[in-house]
Image 1 (cartoon, rainbow, N blue to C red):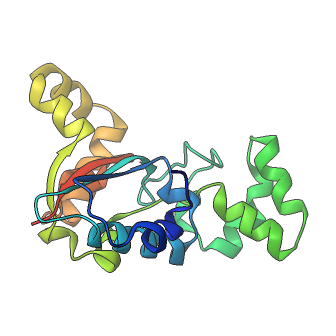
Image 2: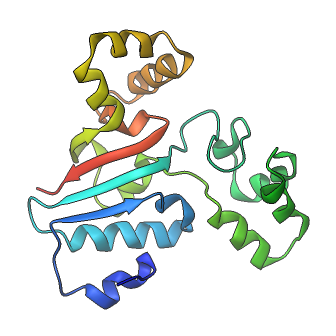
Length: 186
């Protein structure tokens, strides 16, 4: 079955799933859809079930490598980002802001505005209390000391380490450039 994430609960809310995967999708929902989809998916998981989030650009990062290709883009409010998108090097994206209509603004939001631990806090529970069982870079760093050391020498590695120092109780997977998380429901 194929359905919009906000319709899944209406269509399948009486069922439970061992794993629900959001693959490159959360960032393409508007704020209320994202919170609803995450909350409803969590409710459809039994204890021990998994929510998997793949390739969701992290709003906390200083550069948007997914949608606009602009620095600090995820940090600015939606209305300012909409107007500022005219400076994007991606022609197809910057043309959206040429039209100042509600439909153009909605289309703009659906191109992707990033996701952060804040949505998990609001939709499920505080991130500090979530049982994150895996994150991509965390997994790779466990496998190789060389990978871990090389990563820490990059500006991205240093930035990720900075974010973790600001919120040390939150799993490091929430500070990676893209959220690639597996979260187990208790």
